[in-house]
Amino acid sequence: MEIPERVQRKLRELPDAPGCYLMRDRRGRIVYVGKAASLRKRVQSYFRKATLRSAPPKLRGLIKSIADFDVIVVRNEAEAVLTEGQLIKDYKPRYNVSFRDDKRFLMLRADPAEPLPRFGLCRIKRDDGARYFGPYVSAASARLALDFVEKRYGLRKCAPRIPDEETYRHCINDIVRFCAAPCIGKVSPDEYRERFDEACAFLRGERPAVLKEIEERMQAAAGNRHFEDAAALRDTLLLLRRAVRERARIAPSPELQAREAAEGAAELGRVLGLDRVPRVIEAYDISNISGTYAVASMVCAVDGIPHRNRYRRFRIRTVTGSDDPRMMAEVMNRRFRRLKNEGTALPDLVVVDGGITQLRAARRALDDLALAGAVPCAGLAKRFEEIYWEDPGRPLRLPRDAGALKVLQRLRDEAHRFALTYHRALRRRRIRESALDAVPGIGKQRKEALLRHFGSLRRLQQASVDEIAQVPGFGVGTARTIQMHLAREERRADD
Image 1: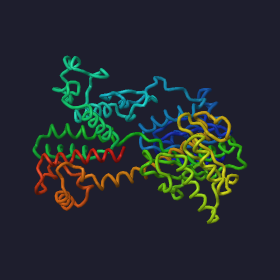
Image 2: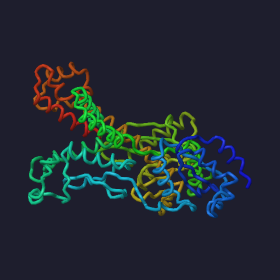
Image 3: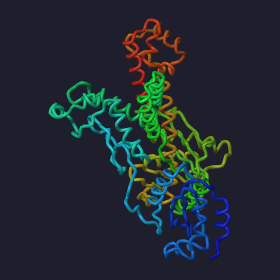
Image 4: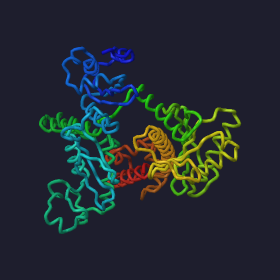
C-alpha cells in the first residue's frame, strides 16, 4: 500500500506524548478515533507492513481508507480516555464501536431548583437545569469531594425533596455528619442556600482559601508530630486538588481547530447563499439587568477562529430601561458609522444574539447608514438554535453537529461571555464601592480604619475573622459580621 505524502510527513512529526488521533478518508470525513499513551508509536504502527499482513479485515479496511489524520495532545492517559469518548460522541466515526461497557466517569450533580438542594453522584449529564461538576477521572476524588462539601458546608444527605420533622426522626446526620438540619429550623432556608452556593463555588475552584486552610492544618499537625493526622490531611488535600483543579480538557491541535473552523465557515456561506465564504464574521450581544449597567460586546472571527485583538465593548448611551432591540440598534449604528467614516473594510457577515426582533433592529441600523446591502446580517436564537435570515420567512434549523451551526454557536457564546464579563465588572465595581457602607455598625471612621489597616477592600475580603478582629476597636463578633456581609456582596457581584 502506498502511503500518501501528507501522511508520511505527519508520521515523521508525531509527538511522543499521550493523546487522541482522528483518521480521515479521501473526503476529509473522520472515520476512526483512537487514543494512545504515545501518539508516535501508536499511529506509526498502523502503517507498518506487518500490520497490513496480520491485521484483521476491519483494521485493514480502515488503514486502506486513511488519506489524512489529525492528533490532539493531552496531558495524560486519563484525559486521552475522556477526549476519545467525547470525540466518538461528536463525530460517530464508522469504524468505531461504542464503549463496550458504556462506562462513564463520575460527576457531582445538584439541582438548584430544589428548596433545599443537595449533591449526589451520577455518570450521565442531562439537560435538566441541574449543576454538574466533573467528570472526575478519579472516582476517589469525586467521592471525597462529595463527602467534603457535605461536611464542611453542612449540606443534607437525606433523599426527600423537602425534609421535615418526620424525616428528622429517622436521621442523625446533624450529629454524625455535621448536617445543618434545615428540616427542623436549625438554619433558615436562606442560610442553607448560602451554604449550598459556597459549596458550588468551591467545586468550581473559586475558593482556593479552603485548600490553603487544609494545607495549613496539615503543616500544623506535622509540626506537632501528629503524623497520622498530617498524612490523612495530605491525602485529602491531594484528592481535593485533583477534584477541583485537574478536570479533563479537550485541547485540539491548532491545525485541527483551524481546519474545522474554516470548513464550518464555508458551510455557513453555502447555507445562507452568500456570494463568498464569510471569512470575517462579527457577533454582537447585549447584557443588562432591567436596563441597568447596560453594555454590549462585539467579537470577531477570521476563518472561523476568534481574534481577540478585534474584540470591542460598548456602554449603552441612549437607551434607558430594558429594551434590547434598541440597544442593539445603537451599537450597530455606532460601530458601522465609524467603519464607514474611516473607510475600514466591512465584515463578511454579522451575527446578532436573538431572534427576528433583534435582527430587524440591526438591519434597520445598517439601512440607516446605507449599508444594508453591503453587510449580510443573521440572528441566532438560543432557545432552539434557530438561524433567522429571511424576513419574513421561517428560521433555519441545522443539524446539531453541523459545522456551520458550531461556528455561529461559538461566536454567539463568546459574545455573550465577553458582554457578561464587562457587565459584571461594572456591577462589581459599584457594589465594592459601597460594600462597607451597608455593614451594620460600621460608620465612616471605622470604615477608614479598616481600609487603612488592610490597604484595600480586596485584602479585607480575603482576611480571616481573627485578622479583622486584630484591628483596634473591632471584636470577633463584629469581624464575623463584616466577613459574612462582604462574602454575600461578592456573590451578588458575581451572579
